View (cartoon, rainbow, N blue to C red):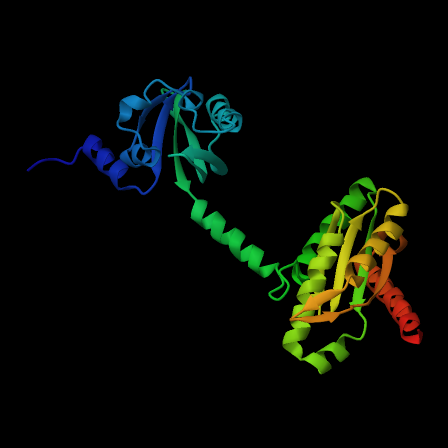
Length: 288
């Protein structure tokens, strides 16, 4: 009866594992790889990589992070696991997650062994779901959930570098009348058009959101106090532009209130203050 040897056991394990496995010498040159590794990169055989390093193979846009990690493994004996990266595979950019650990002989590091998983589909699905969860179904712009996440980044930037920002609260005037007169489907078309107008009005350092109903928010990073008036006028102008909705010409008006983060140093208070100022403007509009 044939014996199971360490050699044929290892050969079969390398064939069966659903990951690309490779091993290198202390100069980061390939000594070998399993078949899945070769198939993944479309290599005809092991001779295509023997004696070469990642830079020679040219499958990383920026090979330096990979080189740095491998040198860390070889110089410190530290295993480094599940590091995300990108590589070029058969003309496409793929996302991978790689792990590497040192190889020892008589207590001395003589090389490294590593493996990688392709996570492109997983990352794309995660990004797709993230996009869906942060996008308003009706208008296609960022939604209230996205606002909650993004404004925290603005607040963090203020606390770190005192970079101030302004929040514009925008509410359409007499939107209920439009819904009552033309129906909700027509009202939805109006909201979609207004969302596009607000987005077009935004400067490069502004972000627009649909906060809910006929209420929108714009966050703008402040570099000059004059930014506030000029952007507010711009938003009004874009919203006030006549719209043709389903064959009907319609003029939309809005009320806008704003507050600066440094006035409040609190997101909740910032929202409350801009909302109150928006309603003050709305009262004036209703008197006209």
